[in-house]
Length: 102
Image 1: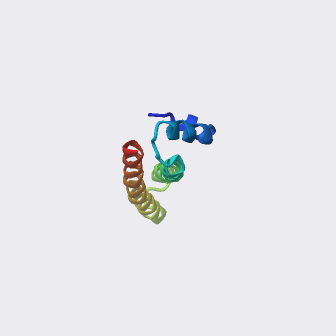
Image 2: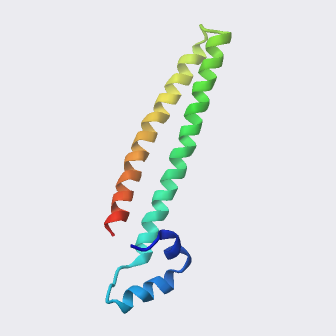
Image 3: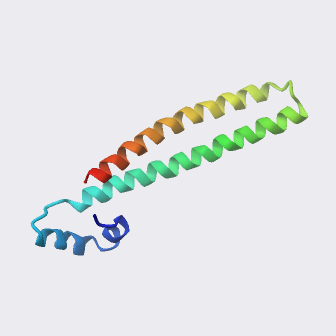
């Protein structure tokens, strides 16, 4: 199996090497899958940071004003983000499986 970084940096050479072995695998499709996976990974990471920020705000509010209605709102937002993160993680896992099959 070729390294994805090598394919990304030398696509035409890798494609030619495969063609010389009568392997007609389309490496561009592989790169497209990897791009989608990387995009999902970045989005998931960003949402995780945002959810962590909400949790930190909840902690600070609990110390300063434990009866604040803002606490519940922040918790709900963090939970909504966690659900979205779980969906993105599942999609990312599926893309990784597709990449390893190719």
